[in-house]
Image (cartoon, rainbow over all chains, first blue to last red):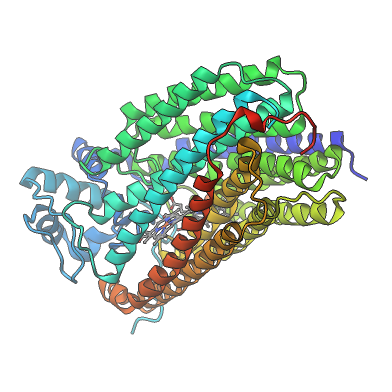
Length: 141
Length: 447
Ligand code: HEM
Ligand code: HEM
Ligand SMILES: [Fe+2]
């Protein structure tokens, strides 16, 4: 039967080996894959400013992006492609809560420039290669 | 209790109870918003309610873990805590940071990164707080007479949890990088180092409650935490499928995360086997129910419901839907909520000297909260599956689908009421126990 010291070796050994592999894979992803798949050359100051606005207002507290966030409002990774620039600007610049289907969004009343930054961010994220996510609805007629 | 300094644990538990109650209030705010009654929109829009709900959850769990550590370490190391005063300072600063963060969320003072909403300046206070806590624990442990496996695993979990908070504090311009490192905190916490904390507390409870030989319990503890890390570290890959990194993660994340339930299965079998094997039957029935309960419900909530959406082919459709909320609730509740409540149920009689071992209210608390939470999980699950089908398969608009599934949030609110009644009973008992006192000091061992 397994002894306590063997069990300890299993724990420590397993941890060290898998952690080393994890670090190696992460290093590879961050240095080789992310720059290409996310088109890092397109990360302009405007996109970054858009990201800050996105974070400062906790948009992820209602929406998802890259499938992460909350489940109260639509997934926005592909919103630029789905709705286009004018629609997005109307939503974030609105001075009364934007509520196309009843559910209210916070009225951010952003300036034209802020809205453009947000659009730039959403356009950039829409172009990231996500290994096929989100899937096309396959039962759609 | 055997050491006077263990009394400080009580106040961490009290803070925990307070924050849990508040967490529930914000849960109801969101449930109503989902039902179409977003009546508090002006003061507490959904994103505020959500940040408060999840952050309160994390802080009440951490407060519970800290209290448990302040109780367990003196007893395992056979040494009083090195500074009780500092422990009280740490408690108060924890409460202050928590309150400031939560008030801030009502005034747009946050960083919109799910679970890591605490703004970075406040993060530094969290760091100081946790370092103080770890300092007290580590010095007590190393000055103590004994270093048991149980106390080492618990301490290791706490130290790693602190270290893993740091990657979440780095700034990135690239959303993919942000997401990548956010998971080092979120995933490696709940599916890694927190399991060490849970395992350590569980082992301590089993040693006390079942009377099974420590060597046997601690051997299996190593096996379980070994399984946790071997599957859980590379299992992080199940969050890297669709965020803008390579496809290798689909395979690695899929295989290793599918093995994660083994650790939880181990935990459940371990608790049941030790209970069967134990000759001594501790009279604290309520602590026993919670202890076996946490081992079993965590396997269902984290293990089985995690497995349900962890393979890339399934996750492609369920990723970021209410299916995730279903799993998140039962997993957090079963693994971490229940272990904290198990520990409090065990410790209270010893801290206060009152032995309410099988009161009806105590048992009612256990059953109502669990039945309520299982019901909530089903409600989220039905809503989630319907959402996945209608939105991701049929291709209906998000908003139209949400209207279709509104009714499930009525069910959610009803079940949440059961849950809340259960928690109400628990807190009623907590208050009835009264304050900790030195008369509860024991001279006999092994109680
Ligand atoms: C006690 C342990 C666990 C807890 C507390 C927990 C909790 C959570 C939470 C809160 C999320 C949402 C995270 C976010 O979006 O930021 C999540 C996601 C996820 N969990 Fe767990 N989990 C646990 C264990 C597991 C296990 C063992 C598995 C797999 C077997 C698993 C599989 C998943 C998957 C695949 C997701 C991603 C869902 C998505 O794509 O939207 N979890 N978990
Ligand atoms: C009265 C009880 C509760 C109600 C009504 C409730 C309701 C909710 C709702 C509506 C959400 C947001 C889902 C969304 O984004 O649309 C949520 C999120 C969450 N709640 Fe609760 N909740 C309750 C209690 C709890 C408890 C006791 C726990 C933990 C033990 C918990 C853990 C969570 C977690 C981890 C999330 C984030 C889930 C995710 O992102 O996947 N909740 N809750
Ligand atoms: Fe995970």
